[in-house]
Amino acid sequence: MFSDADAAALYDLLNPWEPESRPSDRFYDELVGAADSVLDIGCGTGAMLHWAREHGHTGRLTGLDPDRAALARARRRDDIEWVEGTAADAAWRAAFDLATMAGHAFQCLVTDDALRASLAAIRAALRVGGRFTFETRHPQARAWEDWNPSNARDLTDPAGRALRVWHRVESRAGDLVTFTGTTAEPGGRVLRVDRTTLRFLDVAALDAFLAGAGFGIEGRYGDWGGGPITGRSREIITVARRM
Ligand SMILES: C[S@@+](CC[C@H](N)C(=O)[O-])C[C@H]1O[C@@H](n2cnc3c(N)ncnc32)[C@H](O)[C@@H]1O
Image (cartoon, rainbow, N blue to C red; front, side, top):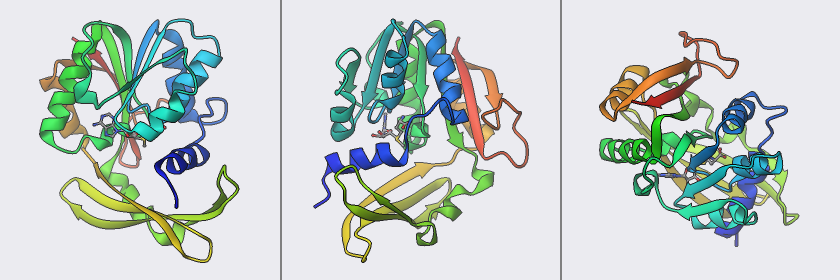
């Protein structure tokens, strides 16, 4: 048995929020620290907002995510508002200075309809001039090629179980990649398989969606140090502004 709660705890183990050592986390942490009110969409287990509150953020912090088990972990802090729902469900009006989708959560928006509905809701939730910041893996880097069992990781989970976790790509269709994440005992007995589809938009397609939703591009980076996008960039990092 490897429950949804176990999977959420494992997520935190595999993806600790560490702004002091991880440039991607620092990038978001600086933006969050400078904003009075923040809506973190696809907040997952809430680590980014937990860190911000713990490190002195006194403004409004709100996390939104459709995954109940992840939100249950997020709710361990009750001085932050946690809301269950998708980006498209966001019903706030001109309430936030900053909206974020960290940890490649933006790639979970896989259909054109989901992208349009999500961007419209995010825009409405922002004050005029508010920013929406997110990253998406650049398709040119073909990150999915690393998602295979030869990159399996062995670890001990928070409950003390020895585990082996790995990914396997099932299909690639256009800009969609579907893959499984398997959690197993070290001997190979499979405890759990999760299937995910992510969308890999290129810069032109991304910018068409953003412009169509009423966002302008304020900042665009190819790496977490603030460098421009080049032919070798692995990320498309965007700071969009509500027009
Ligand atoms: C890879 S996790 C990132 C979690 C967190 N932002 C981080 O940086 O660790 C992606 C998250 O996006 C959430 N998600 C999936 N579809 C979503 C949607 N349509 N709207 C908002 N969040 C979504 C998932 O439930 C998951 O918690």
